[in-house]
Length: 246
Ligand code: SF4
Image (tube, rainbow, N blue to C red; front, side, top):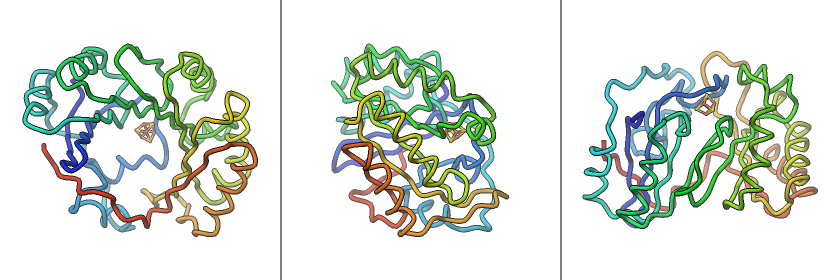
């Protein structure tokens, strides 16, 4: 499989499975800066360091049996399948089936939505909407967002529990674009929860971190269209400990 890294929060039984490989090339992809879970004690400060150098690719990947053997030693209630893009791994359906059968886990897929995943054993989808304006989406990710917008509607129609997320980038994906994304989500269903994350400076991008006031304004604008909007400013304390398993 494409899994190269696993973290665990023992108090709440949450496992994060980190997949390598993506079908987009986002300018603000955190993996360009940090390969490993950004909630670990050894990584959580470094991601805000502007001089930190980019990540290399992982050196080792786990097969399905190894993943299940490792998880067998842990308390597993919820499994988060996360980026890069888990849906590019052709063994994802086998994995989530095995997770349901072995642990009865609640399986959450974090995705950019370009691939419509087999939902037979996925309980929730967290969909990252990069931009609504196609030209901006192409500039940011290298691809048109047509497929992603279609798949957002398909995921909603499937009945799977659905949440949406975007990254707020001042003077780039800012309040105007956040409002366009919010209006698109509202057009599908104004009840879909939407989280706006503050941009973390990455690579040689020209953008700065947003201020708390800018994040507050983006949330207020999104709330004109959506019932449930939240944000992450990057200053939040972790609610529980995250440990590296591999
Ligand atoms: S979709 Fe996610 S993993 Fe893929 S390039 Fe964009 S930010 Fe990175």
